[in-house]
Length: 410
Ligand SMILES: *[C@@H]1O[C@H](CO)[C@@H](O)[C@H](O)[C@H]1NC(C)=O
Ligand SMILES: *[C@@H]1O[C@H](CO)[C@@H](O)[C@H](O)[C@H]1NC(C)=O
Ligand SMILES: *[C@@H]1O[C@H](CO)[C@@H](O)[C@H](O)[C@H]1NC(C)=O
Image (cartoon, rainbow, N blue to C red; front, top):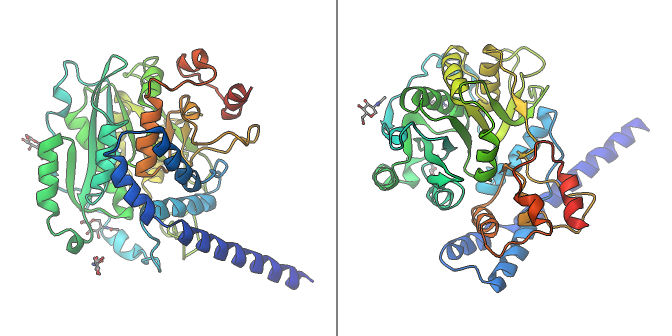
């Protein structure tokens, strides 16, 4: 009996996986890619908008519930990967022995610097936006520059931006990358490039190098937002939130994940053997997507991260640095690391409704076209949410997404 039940369960799982694979291949990215290229040039007409929205609705997957165990983290994270690159047929096996052997080489040269980044405005920028990127993602950087990553005055405060890059792993696909990235840097003055391979397991190096760069070249920035290039950030809300805080005090805010367990399944991308991390749970850490920190916390973290042993998962590593300085990260409702939940109270409400985004700070896993579209919708003078006055008010601390949607639905 038990054996049969187990067999049934496995069969169901298998079928579900197969269904997902079929659905995924159906969605494909080719059509959206073409669309993206066009979107950037064309003005947003309502006809095109509806066409786009129809497409995007298919692409915007209803988000998973808030993650507690790292097992689910894997599930969600691998979906994110699929959003940007086609899934590799096999996982490259992570060489732990090699990693442990080379753990002590953790200082790499800065190949492209922006030493004046934070000296342009008197007193330094209020907010420095920092985005992890890959050399080959030219289009993502471009869209971020044009949308939420804009430099200049936002709500009356100075905002600056940098992208963090390493050396691309596969140089054969991008033989001209050095020339291109130098040109891009000259044009926008927002590229930081270090001399380590830009791989998933080297993101920790990116973290450490960025923090020491910030400590050396941008200690005047009052606050820092650090995020991925595939997020949507409501910078106005972030600024409003930060204005109530003191940059000389500790602050670390994001979508905090508590009590995540290390993955011990060898075939997982996040597999961590016990020899590498013996404890049963990770310290609290901010889920990918983005987080905020104050100048004071940046300085402390920069020092602490130099002392913490390298760990291949960057957000967990940062959690370890936080633990070292004894700082409790703060969880905030406005950070939707794993996308927006479809509101159960108002299932007819579209998750792509810009009014939905008005109260949020960070939403993870958006495609280039979605970021562009959402930013334009949010900044359109024609945007009218049913309860405009309420929405116009500054970000509210404990707003539940459900509550908000109810308000809109009523
Ligand atoms: C950063 O740039 C400045 C001036 O452009 C240069 O003097 C300095 O050596 C650079 N710093 C690093 C760490 O490369
Ligand atoms: C780099 O990419 C090309 C084309 O996609 C591929 O043929 C080649 O095997 C890759 N090289 C490495 C080292 O991954
Ligand atoms: C990290 O970068 C270094 C320097 O480029 C490289 O030797 C190493 O293999 C990379 N590590 C991983 C895990 O990719």
